[in-house]
Image (cartoon, rainbow, N blue to C red):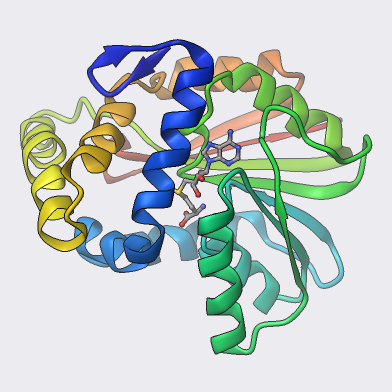
Length: 239
Ligand code: SAM
């Protein structure tokens, strides 16, 4: 299992990912703006417009962190559970929700690979910039399928290394040199951001990831690429 530039045991990866997000939790939101030049807000708006949350729907926002996706879905009237393996990220999210006066959310500490929910609970399952951190991606996809109702939908947004010529070089330079430097300057944490950049490089390419989603049992899968494939929205249905 990969972690940054080394290979580590699966348990160790889960523990280290925990450390990364505990380190970055307090600065996570400001870092997202700094790293993406504010673009992550537009990608998240687009993502939620694809999910089309309906009033009263039960949605599980997995790896929901500090709530960016959940807030957007709750504003459309959905009943959202924000689940994340890291309580520090959830705590920042709970505080943000209070500051913004957003109700209708519940927060739960969960490992995506082993959810505590019974089968067929949710109308939709979302996971944004989270699945590449999960040690056993197949397990997380199987769990997503299990907790969805029939007719439920799966939506995932994730980074990928783009093959777009010209852009690829700029992007590689950005993610491997600039990202850790920004991490150092703002959060005094170069290593966590080096890990985050490296985890993008190691994540399966969109066609490979789409095949994994299909193997988990999802039908009518689709990929929508943004920024020449640097960001991809994957979707599928439980039928
Ligand atoms: N979805 C949020 C967003 O877009 O702002 C947060 C994304 S953040 C980059 C990734 C999140 O995945 C972190 O909060 C981390 O704790 C969580 N995570 C990592 N491994 C996980 C796992 N196995 N189960 C659940 N959450 C996990």
